[in-house]
Image 1 (cartoon, one colour):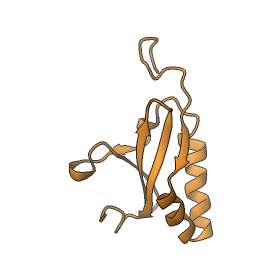
Image 2 (cartoon, one colour):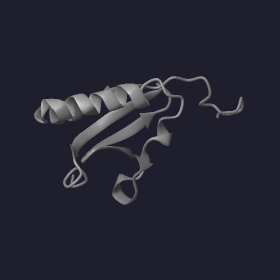
Image 3 (spheres, helix red, strand yellow):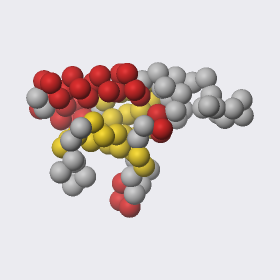
Image 4 (cartoon, one colour):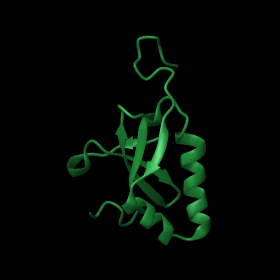
Length: 99
């Protein structure tokens, strides 16, 4: 539960996909696409704290977060000033971290 002093209180986050992530998502099987979109719509969009579902990345990806949807990973950046979870990359866990 958030307190009144928490700047994230009473704020609803939205989800956006950048162009690269949108292209990567379109390449996936339709069922996997639906699963990923449903996860982002039902879990992340509208939440007051999107960090509670994800995990921060480290080393060369520090500052980014990842969400796990089955065998797929979504690499995201939080745009606090706009309340946007921006999906930067979508891919299978085996190769999503390579770039």
